[in-house]
Image 1: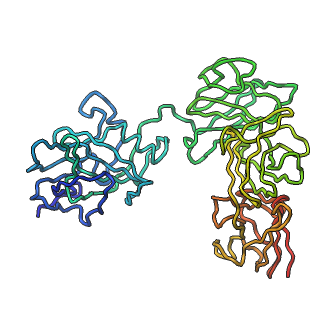
Image 2 (image 1 turned 45 degrees about the vertical axis):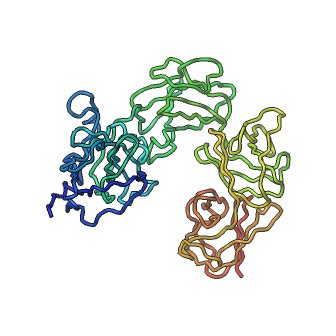
Image 3 (image 1 turned 90 degrees about the vertical axis):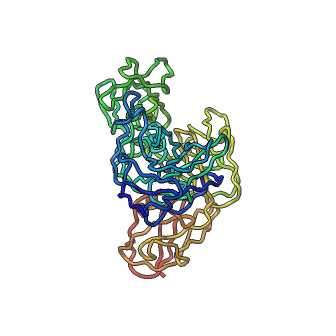
Length: 471
């Protein structure tokens, strides 16, 4: 049997059977060795897309020259006994973040054919890369490719081979530059020359999402505050000016200012779409049954965008308020479930319906006016005392008018780190940490300092405190 080098992988048997593109077969254990060569077809990876190959899409992104906006990926080195009226086309390259090629981590790219060479269109491969890795154009490693080789006769599509997929890992992949690059940082320039840096929504990847924000407290006597935004060596103003210019488009070197109204305000920009908006920014808001102060549970802010926490219900309605003792801003149900609408004056918000009484994890995004509520089925201490895993001995029992008090009796030792989580999961229904007198959503690990022994521990969700009594 003929041998191929490591870049000459995978000869395919020529078997004709109608199939779907998802009818996968496992990879051969020895892809360096051609299989069933006598049956008529053999293929090899191009030198451009061989194992460990470094590929920069920019080098192929041209209509001029031999590349023609495509990347050669597979050569057909032998093709015999192909029935008349069938041609090799509609072939597929699977591009994956790992060698498992699971559906969630894989994109399919339809290849073009020119003679005996199969090509991946640059734009299609770049779009697949974005779908898997986001729009950040930084070089990426760890991607894999494999192929489906098809023949077509009219509407009939058959797969050439057992089926069989030769697979290997590529080297560094450098995608096309972003259509509108996002800078690593942006800052707000005030009319008096003051400069303040904005907070990226995701410091690890500013493209996902490409939003930056800054909380500004505007004195009513100075409102509206005039600002511009700077980032990546460019300065942006508002594209259009009017007295209500608190939302809109950004314009490079724009002469007009962004206007920030009075009060605690969050200025947020989308650096990719070049848009801006301002909205009320509060240290915390409350989930409550309207006009019932006793029902109010605090939700704590993250960058003045997300407000999260536990809320207990004995009535089956919910709305949100800035402060139950001094109502200025209220939010209720929007046009559809999961959305919010702000109300002003004496208007009453449309109440959100709650499916049942009990404790819920509530997540509100004020700039996007969206919310999510998740029923809390269990609440537990999770930490070094139980290997950071679920343990029935550390599950709380709820009580109180609004399910605000949760108690567990368990063994603790000084210095042990722990948090409290809901539904046996760290994210789906929230977790809290911080300090015993200021328990906060997704706070730092708490450290037990009550001594060694068995304790009755009480977590008061409404007051966001933890207390204990030694047994």
